[in-house]
Image 1 (cartoon, rainbow, N blue to C red):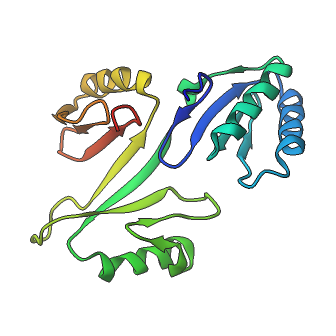
Image 2: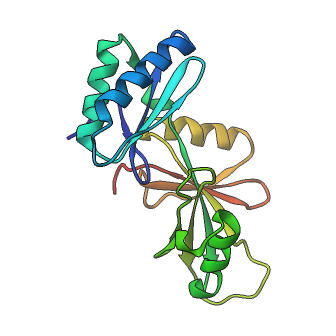
Length: 194
C-alpha cells in the first residue's frame, strides 16, 4: 500500500509533519507516544521548532500516525525527508568491517552482513560494497543520499549546475551517480524502481 504522507527510505518509511510551533509539535509527539506505546516496533520521532520528523518500520504504524496528524490538523511534507549512508569499497570485508563498527559505534556488534547500523542513530549507516582487489589510491568512500523520488530530478539539476556530471544512470530511478569536478561520487537513491 502506498502512503501519501510517507516516503520509503533505506530501512523505514519517513515523513515530516509541519507544525506552527514547538508546543504544537510536542502535543503531536505526545499523542503519537500514547497511541504507539504498545506497538511491537516503536516509531522514531524528532521534534523541531516547526516540524516533527517521523520514521516507522511498520506501515500500519505509519497509517496510525498519519491519522493522528490529521486529527491535529497537521500536514505532511514527505519531500523534506532524506537519509545519508556512507559506502566504503572493499575487496576484504571481514578485515575492515569489525574495525569500522568498533570505531564508529563502540562495538563490533553493530556490524551485520555488509552494514554497520548505529542503534542510537547518531551516525549514518555505513555499508560495504564489494570490489575487486585494486591498488591504492582509488576512491574508497562514496555517499548514498536517499531522497523521495520526486526530489531527485531537482537535485540532479542542482548538482549539474554546480559543476557536477552524471556518471551513471542506467539504473535510474533506483539510483543515479553524480561526480563532482574532481571525480568524487555521490549516489542519489530512491526506493522507486527497486
